[in-house]
Image (cartoon, rainbow, N blue to C red; front, side, top):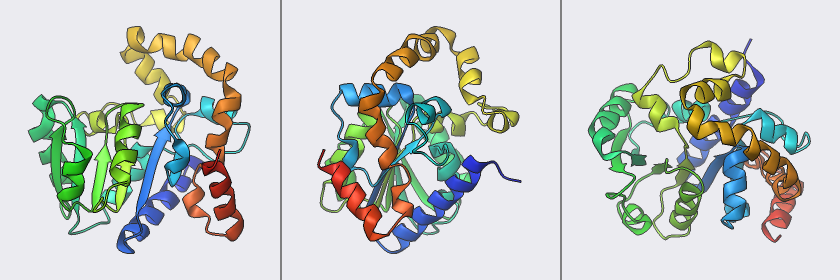
Amino acid sequence: MQAPEHTWSERIALELVKRLAESRNTTVTWLNHHSARLGIHAAVNYAEFDMVGVDGQFLRRILGGKVRSRTSADLVLPIVLSQIPGRKVAVIGSAASNVAALERLLSDRYAEATFEVFDGYAGRPSPEDVAEAGYDMAVVGLGAPLQDDYALELSRLEGRPTLVVTCGGWLDQVVNPRYYPAWAYRFRANWLIRLMAEPRRLLHRYTTGAHLAVRMRGDLRPIGEIDAVLLHESVAERQLRDRVRTR
């Protein structure tokens, strides 16, 4: 039996595939308690996204039960990329030393799509360059809040890719397939694996950062109202999203 986050992620993935087939422009990001806090401090307008997924059980608890299930780019994107034959995908965010390897790995794993990988640092293309190149999909892995700003800037341009999706650290997982052991998802221990691998960088995030996120939960809660909203096409849901966007 699939875990709830896998079932929900599959539904989101299939909806994104459908929207690409229908040429419906869609922009998606995922947040955990750390990236959400950084983004709000940087004044990212998350209401401009068509969906903000919640990637983290801690943020889900902060949002007070508004989120049906955790989802993440690393659960959604493999499904999407395996079902878009003939599509041209821009990937922005690799280190310069990994560009060729990442492009080869993606092309081997999702052979029916065409990938072009860009350095996310000095060689990063502008959103205008990406929009003019005629990609069907853009995957942006620049870290928060930069990737959210980049995705929104790209989404506002004429000629934008139909799907614009942020991916956090998913590109690292493509390069290193053993990034998470198989049991990590089952026991919801991804955060612990990362903490053990990078304690100096992440200890603050899961201690002081977690406390700060709880203190600003009032600012975070509107995110829960646009989590997975693209799966709901009722008039009531569209009106809800419009209200969130005007805040």
